Image (cartoon, rainbow, N blue to C red):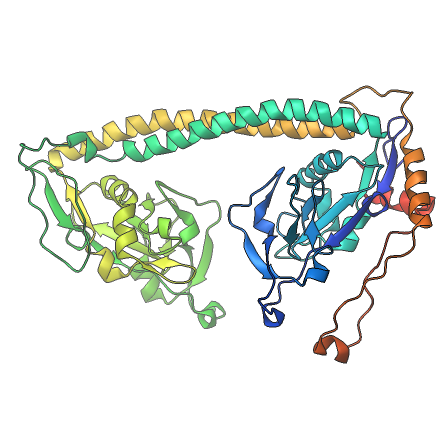
Length: 497
């Protein structure tokens, strides 16, 4: 009995480091780079579950004598050390490639099928079991020593291969179904964007009279849609009062004399809806709270973030009392009954090209100024038509959202089926055991004997000036020692399945 569950007959527990060699990639050190040996390398972002993307490779400088240490070869498993720890894929190309320190190279012994380990790490990740070996609070990391301690339920090698064959057959069907549903979701989202484009419903022929174009302003308007002559083009600043939000002041947050009110951030203001599950609070002067208090019908529009977030937003319905908005969110309060707020928000959400041309892009973020956004061209239909337009669009949205919800439910069920399949595989219930298979314990004895017979590998390394001045512990060199029953049992109990 191991922990609370007995492994199937012929299986055994093994720490990953006892059945595989692990190595971290090369640290990217631009200061010491000579530029003489540029080498393509894999980053954390290149490695996804089960696949490695090589479309956007970067290069680093690696001395020729270091290449063997910092390259993965065909059949090696590449495992993410940071972020989504454990995310892994097998390098299947004939040409070796370098890899950075954010990745582990794992080379299983003859006791462990690489594909089996790849699927097991996926199961351990989604089941939350790898998290026990992670370090760090904000960004999780899986250090090499902790990775080597991860227990692996080890079936006989022949059974590992049978498990992989069944997994790949079943998962390939789930993957195909998921790809089909993802494609449907993309089409539905495109239709959702088109459904809210109310100018498309009144597209005019070239010989039909259209509304007058806007006078030039301090913006680039491009080719605006032709709208009926009884409609009107107006600037946002003429349609609504547009104001920016509050900037967070850390000093005020500790002053109990300032009222504490809810405030909306960019993360709360999504395209066509508001995400209000997590709304934070802020302390501001009472006058500022009164000035920025949101009213039902206010249109919220993002001022900054990724380029595709500019102008993104939706209508405030008064869901939270006394809420205000931060400085990266604009509030547009329509003058009187000039325009239905839903029409303004739908049009702004579809004006990505205008925001892209008129916004500013810094190194990491895009933004648009208050002055500039007031120049956004807005189509204004006759008031008698606006309610019918809103009703027609909302009917379309109900149908499309229902289709999207159904597709998302299918995706969720597919994920649950995948996880259940993986769990069954690593509990020994996916394929029958064969008493004629050599037990995993024999494999472990063979691996330990082979490692004990090998001389320790010697590795030369360059010493930097900083390292020469500061003593440091020697890194583990060579192969892991022969496993002993007591440590293995301790690891098994820590990682009970």
